Every structure is written in C-alpha cells, then in structure tokens.
Amino acid sequence: MKMSKLFVQTLREFPSDAEVISHKMLVRAGFIRKLTSGVYNYLPLMWRVLKKIENIVREEMDSAGAQELLMPFVQPKELWEESGRWGAYGGELMRLKDRHGREMCLGPTHEEIITAIARDGLKSYKQLPVNLYQIQSKFRDERRPRFGLLRGREFIMKDAYSFDTSQEGLEKEYQNMWNAYSRIFKRCGLDTKAVQSDSGAIGGSVSHEFMVITDTDAGENDVFYCECDYAANSNHAVSKLPEAKIVGDFAKAEIVETPNTHSIEELCEFLNIPATLIVKTLVYIIDKKPVLALIRGDKQIEETKLLNAVGGVDIRIAVAAEIEELLNVEKGFIGPKEGLTIVADETVRDLKNFVIGINQVDKHGVGYNWGSEVKLPETVADIRLVEAGELCPECGKPLKVTRGIEVGNIFQLGTKYSKPMNAVYLDQNGKAQPYVMGCYGIGISRTAAAAVEAHYDEKGIKWPLAIAPYQAIVIPVSTKDEQQMKVAEDIYKTLLKHGVEAVIDDRDERPGVKFKDADLIGFPYRITVGKSIADGLVEFKVRETDEMSNIKPEDAAEIVITAVSNLK
Image (cartoon, rainbow, N blue to C red):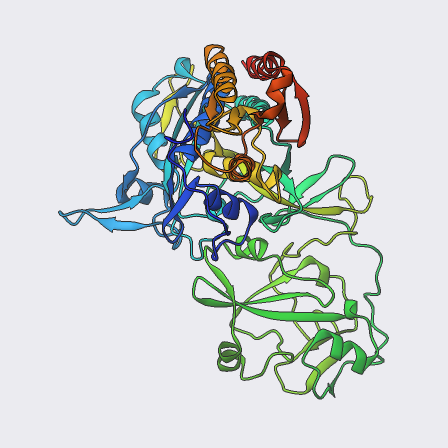
C-alpha cells in the first residue's frame, strides 16, 4: 500500500471529548470517527486491526472444537419473554417495533436465540456436547457511553454458547474456553488476568472476566488480587476484615443530641468513637423503589452486590430531596424505617452497643443493639466494597488492588435459559432433560482498544505485531532522490513478496511529518532510506522499544520477514 493512497487522516490534536488514551489515539491516528453518541465508524486502518483480532479468535475457537454460525441482530420479543429477560434486562435493551407493530430488540447478547436454535436442532444426548459461536455487532443502549470503543453502544463481539448433558461436562468446556482465551489474548499481545466476577444480566452461578491490567484511567473496575492467585472484580470480591472495635462502651441505650454531625467523620469526632461502631444507612433507588442499605460506618456499599441482594436491575443513590420526602429527615441522620426494603451488610450483624441514625435531625441512637432497640433486617448479605489491605479470603494475606479493562468473560449458565425456554434433549433413558449451558464472550473492538491502552507512548500507538494494521513502513526521506526511492521500492517489494503487510510512504512531505505519522499510527517496524544509503545503510526502528540502528537494507528486510513468519 502506498501512503499517498491510504485512506487515513491524522490529526494534530486529540479530540476534545476523548477521556482515555485509546479513544484519543484511535481518533487522532485516523482509525475511528464518531458517528453519534457511543457509535463509531471503523475506518480502513481500524478494520484491518479488527479483522486480525477476529481471525485469531476464529482460529483458536475452531481449534478448541467450537463451530461458527451467524444469528440475527434484530430479535423478537417472544423469545425474551420466554427467558424472562424482556422486562428484567433494563434500559440497555433497545426495544423497537416493526411496521406491523411487532415488538423486537437490538441484540445486546444472544442467549435466547441460541437456545431456540439448540431446542430445534439438538434432540438427543448423542448430539451433545456442542459449542456454537458467532462474531457480529451488538447494541446496548448505555446510559452514559464513554471511553470510545471501551464503553460504546454498538460494538463487535464474539459470543459462544456450549450445550452439555451435565455440570461435569460444562466445567470441562469452561476450562477448555479458559485455555482458548488465554491463547487468544497472548497472541493479541495482551497480558490478561482471569478474575472472579458478577454474572450481571447474563446470569449463571460462576463467571470470570479476563482483564487487561492497566494503570490508566481506562480501567473500568478495581481488581483485587493476592499472590496466592486469588483475583476478583470489585463487584464480586470478598475479604476478611482486620480486627476492629465492634462493641461500644455506652452504659445504656439512649437517644442523644448530635448537632451538625452530617458525616461519619463528624459523628466520630463528636462522640469520640471509631467509625466501626456506627451503623451507616444509605438510601438507594432500585427499579424506581427505595431501598435502605445498612453497613458499618468505615465501609462502603458495592452497588452491584446490593442490586443482586434485592434481585434488581437498575440502581442509583437517592438525592437529598428524595430522602427528605421519604424519611422526613436530612442526610446524616438516616436510619432504618419499617415498611421499606432494608438490606444489611454482614459487617453490622455482630455489632453491639452501636450508634445508628433514628430519622431525627441532630439526634442519634447510642448503645443500641439488634433485637432490642432496633430490628436486624431479614436480608443480611455481603454488599460491601472490598478495600486494598483487607485480608485475602483464601490465604489471609493483604489484598492488593489495580485497575482492569474487561476484554472477555466466561459464564456457567447451567439451566438458566434451557429450563424456562423448555430447551431439552432426550437422555439415555428417553427422558427429557434441559441442556446445561455455558456462555463465553470476547469484545473484539474492546480488545483493540485495550491493546492501545497497553501499548502506547506520547508519540502514538505501539501495535503488537499480530494485530497491527500494517506490519512495516518504508520511508524514503526524499522522494526526489532516485537512489533513495529505488532502494525503498526494492525493500517494499521484497517485504510484499514474503507476505509482509507493508506501506511505502511515497508522499512528497517533510521527513518529520512522515516520522510523526509512522509513530502515531503505530507501524511495528520502520525502515528509513536516507543519506546513509550512500554507505549502504538504512535506519531500522522497532516501534515497541523505539530502538534504532543503521543496518544493511537486506538485513532490515530479513528481520521483518522473520518476525512476521514467526506469527504463522
């Protein structure tokens, strides 16, 4: 490909609406362009990257025994009603009607469709196990699309679904997909960590996310981990708490004046107690209904855990006006109230002689206990956000925390979809049994963005060789110099002959412009033909390390050819 013909327009500045490095780099380097909120055009450079990731995924999925198919992007309401998700999925499900008034949705995922396919085609245990997958666009109507391709509304995804006759078979396929995912991300140049995670709207009893560990702002979730190999997403992590004071020294239970104590810190200072003796009450709106969450004063609520505890779909913290209307009290003095849904975190169960809000301004209950002054809620669950330094649940050592970008996930669905949709096969005894299912997703476009987050510098992208849009660029410093152009074209043709995807920068531009574009776009190898060609040398640059050397043209070509051949 000649640079003069390549459809790419690089920008001098980062886009003003970009928050994370992958969004900034991909727009500035001419890979993507925004169409509307959360929806992007994949320009030729980006499309080459995506197709390479797809091919790696396809090769490893096929090698693992899965079979590819393609399912419709538009899905009928009826199947979602069968699974029970039509009303439960939430606002991310884009619902629409056709000209006949039939209700449909844009597919955010395909559990219902694949289960219907299996129901019609897998009638006997002799046909199982089976793993079917597709690669296609999805749509989720995110409330707040951000981070470019990392949290868009439309995205490209590989989703696979396995059908087995037993939990043992599911676990075997789960490990098979785990191994395949490890190979896929390694080939894409990504260092990933598999972490325990919440199953979310997909459902199932066991799930793991494959996270690219990063210290950039693009990391969506905190990942808690330990040297013993325990690792979990913040919405699933658990821990052992260090010893703390949980029995108060109050002589008796009473209501005391606590003026202007609107925060835990102010209340601790006023009463001269640690936060571990306070039951903190927060008000959430879950599926448009109020829920009170109780937790120890020094800890924070993990909203996904709270959502799961009440079986909800949509969650947000209540605003001041809602709190006042509901409890007739201002923030800082909230407490449990009969008639409302209340969930208590496990941290409050063993508290004694504690302090708690009583829904009266400038007053708190002190020396309170469960069962006497206040009733322990029926629902007590782990709704606590783990913090770094708390103890690993497996080995007891302090947990560490980092940021991660989810690029893949695997779920043990069990019979979550097969039972309600009556998707069954006949076992050895001729008895109908529901399929035992698994689900396995990889974000193709997210993987590309995550690769940028993991491989860049201030000059631009550093694409891993296996997924780079082009593997090398040959730059003649002066297109008017006949010797430089001849050597550059010879190198370029040699690379093409040996299967290297190469670009020659034939533009009549200043060398600095060419070099900046090459670094910004992220060609893994750069061969520059300049004045040193008079001495039989070219400049050879490795983009990942920025290491440069002056070597013979044929040696430069051979290095690239060998590196590319080793990918195959």
